[in-house]
Length: 190
Image (cartoon, rainbow, N blue to C red; front, side, top):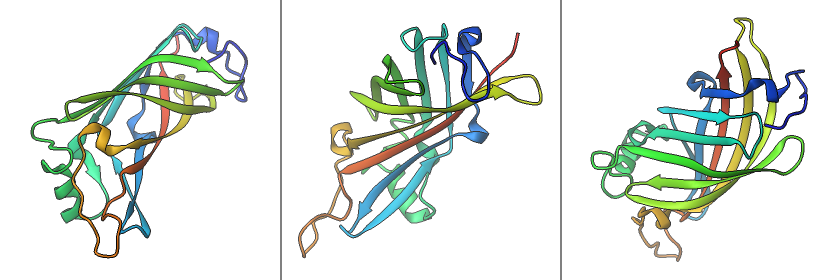
């Protein structure tokens, strides 16, 4: 969120205030390796959050809240297992949270976002590379901005340690998780 005019012609310095995640146009998705040979993708469908900003990266704060029980991999049995105490333990730890600690510009549309990610009862610092996809005004007079980000994490760092060794070597589920975040933010125009 620099004070420049972007592709859509909006000046971000004039867009200070509170931005809200538009859930219908946002996604938090993940990819893990299964059986050491194929990718399994999933997503969380219950997401909310805000970005408080003065129009500059340094003057911005991100907070995201995710319902752990909203996990979906398009397989009911696997999703039930992911919700169990073996993984997210959603009965005991219903929310996943992210709160930024710093946002630094890496160019006109690229940022490094650092913050604290809490899964289960474990909070760890993470870094995410984020790109601004664009911004502009929608037909209803609201300002909108789109951002995409990726990060990799080791699920064991957050207490997600369940696994099974394979007879051929390796494990059933990779410890390395790729997280992809695509958000559309909305801001009520003055």
